[in-house]
Image 1 (cartoon, rainbow, N blue to C red):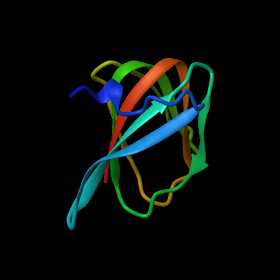
Image 2: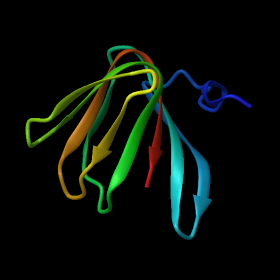
Image 3: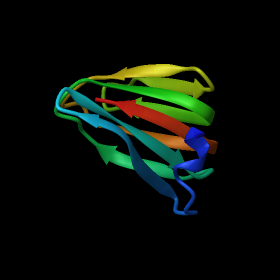
Amino acid sequence: MNIKELNTQEKPVSATSLFKSELGNATAIKIQPREKLKEHVTKIPALLICIDGHAIFENEKGIKEILMQGDYVNIEPMVLHWVEAISESHLILIK
């Protein structure tokens, strides 16, 4: 199996559950070029890992991280954040 094969729909942003347990979960996210995962907050800490592509993570505190293959960012709880894809981007969100 390959992460890129999980989100086959050509929607601007798509997400598929990759793993779930009582302790946490992982979600595969695909963002099309020049599309945006809209502003939102998480109630618990999260980790966003870029598997492939080029995206920009930003939050309301002014943090801006360029994400390319292998890069990751820790996401603080209760802080508004969003992700914009420069090129088609495949990401894993772990909570």
